[in-house]
Amino acid sequence: LAAPPTATAPPRQPHLPAAPQPSTPPQPPAHGCQPLPLRTPVGPDAARWTTFDGERTLIAVARTVTSTIRVLDALTPVLRDDPRVHVVFGYDPTSAFSDGVHDLLRAHGARVMPWDQLTRVPCDLIVTATENADLSGTDAPVLVLPHGVGFHKLVPDARGPHERVSGLVPEALLERAWLTISHPDQADQLAALHPGTVGRTLLVGDPCYDELLSSRGLRARYREALGVAEGQRLVMVSSTWRGQSLLGRQPDLPARLLAELPLDEYRVALVTHPNVASAHGSWQLRAGQASAREAGLLLIPPTAGWQATLVAADVLIGDHGSVTFYGAALGKPVILAAFGDESMPGTPMAELGRVAPRLSGPAIPGGPESPGGPESPGGLGLYEQIERAIAGHDPERFAKIGAAAFAEPGRALARLRADLYALLRLPEPATPPPPVRAFDDPVPERQEVRSAVVVTAVDGDTVTVRRFPASVSGAAGEAGDREDADGVYRHLCCQDREPDRRLVESASVLTRPEPAATPVAALRWARETLGRYPGSVMAAAVTTGGDCLATLRDGRIAEASATGPIRDPGLLAAVVYGWLRAGRPLEGIATLRMGGREEAVALRARPTGPPHA
Image (cartoon, rainbow, N blue to C red; front, side):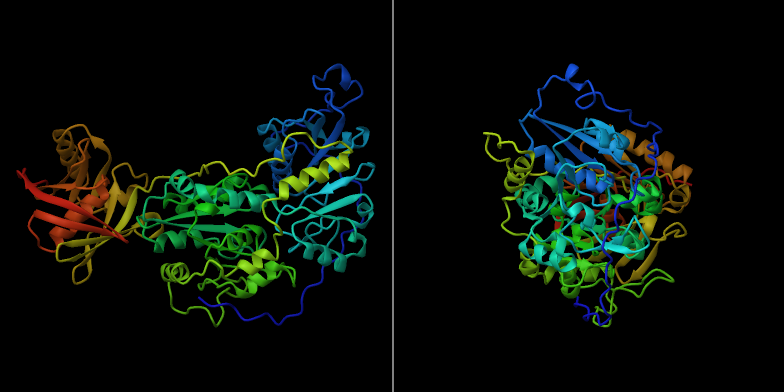
């Protein structure tokens, strides 16, 4: 893997945000329910209904899923144990990415106020992680939180045809807005973009980065929650939004990874920016990754779980999104599959794009040039590139880049609480500053892999097995067995409940996914299965005792018993299959090898039954 050459094109110049325009009339949320004006804890007669005698009112702006998550993540620890502050979320439905915001707030039990009530509610502080909300008609101070890593990205300006720097508020708001930053250099960057930001920044740090650091000790737990077995590697694929993102450039990359990475050695997880699902719908995102999901892709919800997945990952394939930067700052091996010119020149993110290695491979037809330049590792497949990135990675490679974005890690929540209470004109609670907590376990959306192309290589008593998900390996038309090379054999193995019946009818080996209660039940199932599918040569089932009974079409029965924890009938059947194709008798001890793992498998012949027609 090699770093790309430095770009020679002149940097794109962003436009300053336009002056706020009156918001368009609010549109009902996707579920058809427009929030009604609140009567409590804000409203003309709110005091009649409230339980807590709040001294201040804070309005949190909820406009997009991304910015709403950031506000929730910040306010939840900062305002803990303090009933003095009434918090109401003002729901602004005018964004192109408002879909999902109302559901997110309801899921958190937040009080949701319609946007047109904002100007009628006296409040002491407005907290927002979006700079696009129209706050005209209000006069409260505004605390602006970033919804990514610093101010590194050009995005479309919702108020006009130009692009703007993400995170920079309109000039009219600067006189009462405070912009939180994670590094002192960001104050200089903002001052160069707009002199009105001078003196309007607050050095806080990055609470998300602090929590990522705090969560590293739970890496093994997160891997277990994701289903990553001992000896497996986790590849995390991260995509931001718009056409220059990873999915915008290479929407088939998750499927291609799963087609090239042996499923017993690798797991692949996909994290997408919330704007992807908000713009296109989660249904279309799932539909676009249907084959990859059937191949075992772990689809991480965009609202939670990506942080724990990042901690658990062995390598990150990303783009110019903030998640990629967080991965580099954590010391992860990072490979760029895309990097758009939306990245602001002179920022740490732009520096990451300059020095990080690129993934070589095809770009989408008619799309921009492939991210793999002349210095990319030509001719290497995805497996080889990932293996090389992991083997040659120096954890300190991106240390300076991370240090240029995150100042004094571990103090962000304490500083944020101090600044927030100062703006509220309230003394901080007497309790200690909020602790930096670890993230909850990730809960991925996943499907079981039910069909695989199996490659067995027999060398002496060792059977090396590599399986590749059939849904992404072009196996639908693959019938029968074949020998790729001397001692290397390939066959299609399917569970009998595989929904794609073309695969079942083409499979050489059929397996029963659930254990059979007795050996008799396993053999009965095998005979019936071989009778239904005349193209198969073997049917294998594991008993509750852990032994695998593989019944051949000619009536022979082989018993395979692993000395270790393996009880997967597909793996044990692959040992029997490779052993037989190599001409070995059904007796002895075989060594099953998968990646760097080995396990002994005892083979023996059982009394032969009648051949199956």
